[in-house]
Length: 274
Image 1 (cartoon, rainbow, N blue to C red):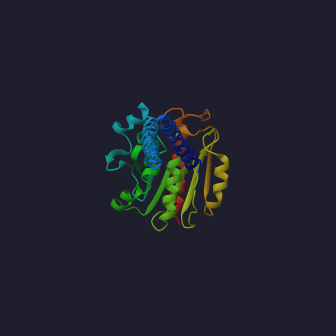
Image 2: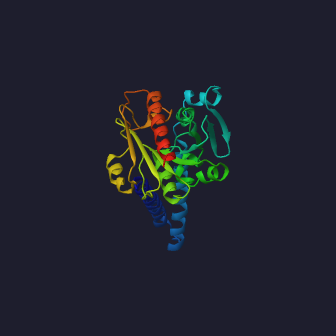
Image 3: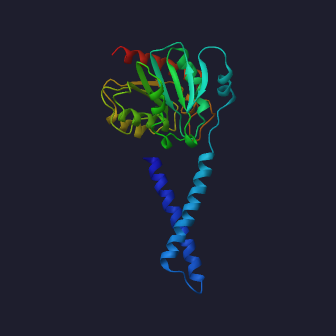
């Protein structure tokens, strides 16, 4: 909801300013333009400004750190390969898979260390590579993985905004999705009781709105599992450095990701035992 309100406010400001600007120009003209032409020019200028600002905003993003990129060439443990639409992290397991939506404006590769931790513990991972690093632009990206691969247990998950999109996907695909993993995120639509839910967040997370998180519990199915990582923050689910507005973690990213991986493994076992 916050992102929607900010977007609406931005559109209103941009088009308001463009209308005022063209209005000032129109007043100084000896031969004034027709009002309808004035409005059309205002809209055109507004669209250009909005697109330019939006493009710049989306291209300022959090980049994957060296330790995350190093996973691509790591010969030990789960094998990482590039596939159409993302990365496949193939571990020793064959029964469960996690399809993961990255957080907004974060390089997908930043989550490779976490995906490798999870895959090493027996759950294959599909890390989605999304347009402009925004899950909202390809909410059904998991469809491609679901169509090509077949696992007895399918989990969708994500970090921050990516988690919200993953939860929405699960709400719309209750017949094919067994569980949802939300990292510092919450659902915005009711989840069916047949879909399991694991929610993980850190005590030092200052980005996640606790009020929105609590309000979203009305959408959570019975039996949902919550794991709180003592000392963890918002950004350390990935390896992309500090995030604006976040709290300072008192544990390392490696420790936070290891605890997360164990929580996901335990959650997947409960789904397979159903």
